Amino acid sequence: MTTTADHLQLSPAERSSTDSAGRRTYQVRTYGCQMNVHDSERLSGLLEDAGYDRVEDGDVADVVVFNTCAVRENADNKLYGNLGHLASVKAKRQGMQIAVGGCLAQKDRSEITRRAPWVDVVFGTHNIGSLPALLERARVNHEAQVEILESLDVFPSTLPARRESAYAAWVAISVGCNNTCTFCIVPALRGTEKDRRPGDVLAEIEALVAEGVIEVTLLGQNVNSYGVGFGDRLAFGKLLRACGEIDGLERVRFTSPHPRDFTDDVIAAMAETPNVMPSLHMPLQSGSNAMLKAMKRSYRRDRYLGILDRVRTAIPDAAITTDIIVGFPGETEADFDDTMSLVREARFSGAFTFQYSKRPGTPAATMPGQLSRKVVQERYERLVALVNEITWAENQRSRVTRSRCWSARARAARTPPPPGSPAVPATTGSCTSPRVDMPTEAPALPVRRLRSGPATW
Ligand code: SF4
Image (cartoon, rainbow, N blue to C red; front, side, top):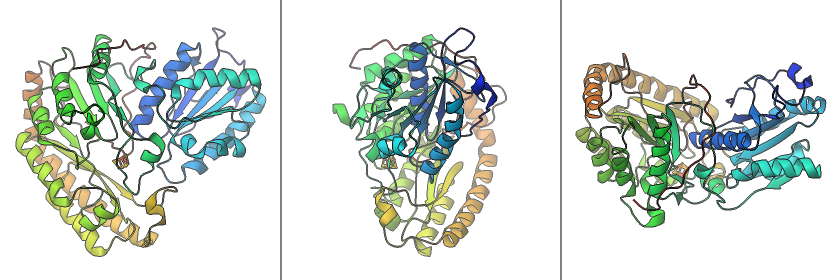
């Protein structure tokens, strides 16, 4: 699976359309967040299950799949640029197919085959399991196949997977989001929140551990609302505690929490479950109550800071990181000062900082009070300077503390800390932050099929 960088070489395009074993080959190019990385592992698993072999980055495959993101600025221009580049490759390579899936496909639908008629398959976020069948139908019918569902067909985690890491795995606990943040396109493209049953999640984790995985990251657009779908508001804390009971599971992380739904039982579960890492990545977005209201982020700065206080009381070594948007429409200098003061007070260990820019299809894109690039840039630079100053000081201050706590937690979890690890690697990423690539040095793994688990705790 490649990342956002494209590494096309034309020479392999003229080679045979199969690999040395006579099988057709594939490549998945992934853009965007951790959920897309998770979905791409499923796309790879599906294709391998259907008889395709993966090619190395830099080679051209018989089937190239773009798993797209609509959150990034100019995502569509980049996609069409990449598709344009592949058109000439496809023209020289008999039988080559191109598929486009993910959030941008869900958003643009048949617009993709109109602008890039050499694309063979367009599929959405709700039907990634259809990819092999759509490729086959396009091949037999000599006609592009566009299939976009409005709601989830099969939960992606139940599909076969080809994981990128031997020891770490993403585990989706929910898909979609019930919030309506005005800068975010995710709810429109991923739909409302659908929760997996806890028994299914735990069965997947146990199966992963049996395969040698020692670390899982629980994924959801809003992990703190997990359970709303089956009527248990305390489900996420219970899930963390249940992860603590799984022998051989050494590290548990999660992303992303939402301050509105963050409850004290989750803090207690984090503190009392030895294999849950002492880290929290909780998106702030703005320190101004007026901006939070305009963003439809239904918490205020006091609530956010209160959660941090309680987390630090329960987990003194917690590494806390965040996401912040600068220059949201209508942001005044006073609003920005509120963000700066909150950053000083919160003393984050790290922060992803973003300059606001319009995302077509979001309410914020048409709001009055859009700021000039110059103003946004100037505020952004001030924020980055402050974040750097504070995170450097925080990491210096806590280096020794965390090293001690690492050892204590590791002993509690009956596992040694990673060699030479002074600080806890923060869980990063959120519904809006860039993804963090899992280490990929591990050998390729076979496609994994999920055994189904009980539907209850
Ligand atoms: S920013 Fe996150 S919480 Fe808000 S709507 Fe988007 S996915 Fe949901």
